[in-house]
Length: 516
Image 1 (tube, rainbow, N blue to C red):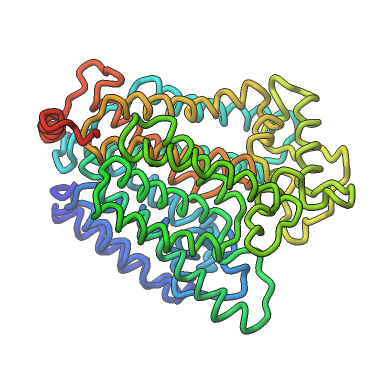
Image 2: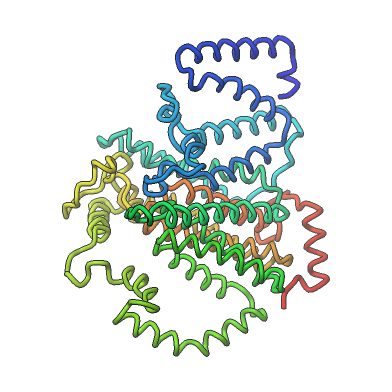
């Protein structure tokens, strides 16, 4: 591509195009007049660097910047990351005022980088390293997602569905395999796990400190009511960051990893506390249980088991007292109680979510195999409060994405979309028990933690349509597949094992692999 751009006729043609586009925008839309120049510079950079650098940069920006579409800080504060977040997550026509740009900068970046990678491979350019193939069942499951959402769109619109909300119902599922393709082409292997960990933990720290600043210095002094500090989906980043810290210590237990785990956990738990999302604590607890069940009987696990058995009676008494009187030091019990019995249980009223779930199940029962298809909202058997003034398409995007997937796709659609979740856990666990370097095994545990957090977000808070959920589950799929291939948990014909990884694994075996 670099040689192509360096040809004089091509260069002059592109230069003329940039000049004309800049002048035209200067007259029509002065606010975005420099976009052609910026695009030309970006094109020149992309022609020279491996694709891993722009992809990892994009990953960091997506996780760190404010997700404007989810209205961070309850819409009551604009952080320094708000405007770049708007550029990244909102449709460009909304941000720039230029009509016809009905897509986000993420959409443009993802499909542009895929086109660049495909072009390089087709032309035989050696700029990018050869990527490790993912297990074929996992690849087939990702392709099945594309086939399934295409069928759900056609099925729904053919039955009178509205094509406008239908495309937003499938957007994140469409992008999920695309993210996996880019991550697989950009992440070398386990040697990049530490880079990914730093990006995720850095994003969690950013969210935690900004959320704390907003609550302590903005919301409380002004008496503002807020349901959350940053966004609902930040739960995914927090839980993943905690899983990285915990698994790094449990797989390589020493004072260095212990101190790092304590520091990282303290900051992230602060962010979770200010963000005040019950599902975050439920997800983290499930991740700890999953790690405990999957991991071998190490020294840390033995100590944790003994401590748990000793404290079990105290914990039971604590929960019993807190269940009856959930105030003061017993208030954490109320968080879990509210998820089990509902917020209005004492009055006999049904929660909004309970009514919504009942309507979703009723919609699914009308066509349990094929569902309604995209473009149809769920049926209101019990009338919900009309929130269309806040969220116009609320009938098309239920809070419970799992029941929503059953309602819109039936068993066929649900299976076609959800199969990749089970396979991701399957390959991660198989790879975990065949890996020897500590950070390889830690990567497997983090994958399982991301999947648990993703399932909870999908079941409790519109996870399928969330940017953060889509990005992190795509990262989990990629890491799971790479680990499975490199550890031999799944043998792909002709799949190369990078020499560095093989040597590292062999050295780890010689010294005991870090297992105790």
